[in-house]
Image (cartoon, rainbow, N blue to C red; front, top):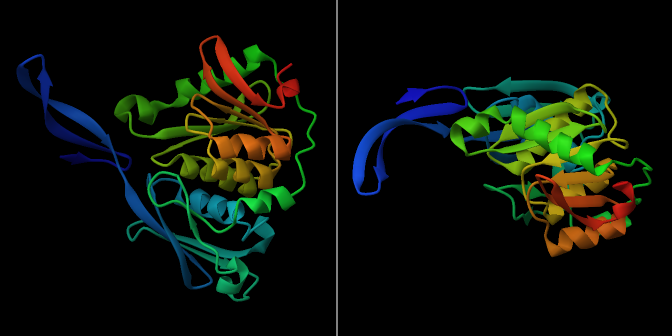
Length: 262
């Protein structure tokens, strides 16, 4: 085996129509990353071990434990140990802030969220007036696929990007589709980029927790190559979020608030 940060190359046996041969195969690296907040262990995520600081920040932002970098006193990444230590200026009891709620999601690995689906219905609906032409949506999906280098090598990761109406701004890949989105959120948090007029583009399934992330961040449009779920469609309808799935070639399915696809 030849190891790398995100890819491991292993000699395997290929079986093709009754014949066998050896070949080198690229396999995506999966590793645990544990987030500590104010000295308390919060969660362990299974991820692609790159940009762990962004993943930790994005996860905390998605869970409502963090809203800006002004709340962060210190951040330390211990790559060898797979640890990210975050110190918040608010030293109040972490368990109390989580309200004791922990829900296992339908995400890859052991993704966790600490809010309930009904929280989204209490949030303010997305009020963005941004619109996107169908060709712009297709172009953004093409850009996502062009940037998916790790996927092309391994076939084992998801891609996600945040974009304006013309181009991708930030792009990340990870074994977990939620992780890829959280890395984007962490990057936007670091660079103080707001998401109210942006578009989330992803290769992964649009499930309810993905919609909840978008609602909390006031993201108005979600584009995916994959399918939604019934609950995610209901939440998108309620939160005034435009959800577009199966963006492939010259077709797409607009599930909610089609007026933004102008």
